[in-house]
Length: 169
Ligand code: FES
Image (cartoon, rainbow, N blue to C red; front, side, top):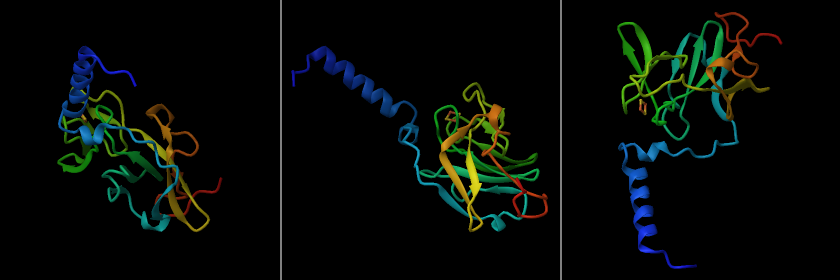
């Protein structure tokens, strides 16, 4: 290996330091490869009522399971600004997802409420399905941007909002 000259060393050191220290959330900013193994988030019957299940919101899973309007979907909790996981908050207007880094706010479905000039897009959804045993599986290798939230595989359509049976295809 050739010896590194002084200029290259200084540039490399500054770049590395800036990348690690830029906002205090450097440990969560890196984007690890998505786990190819689906995440089992329990039985479909566990999601009998509308609302947000944030049991898997923190890293490394970083997903909220949301039941809303007869659909069950998986929201990537990593903020679209610098990928810090958002947190479920109760507000006077209802539940929302807030970023602890710079304050961006999202609706529970991931829609952008107020990015405060930082986050500019909605949170992503992950692929979601029900297996033969009635378990809900989240596929983090399949990502849906907001324009594709109605696409096949981006949600489980419940036959009736009051039931936990998937709708017939
Ligand atoms: S990381 Fe979420 S607003 Fe900056």
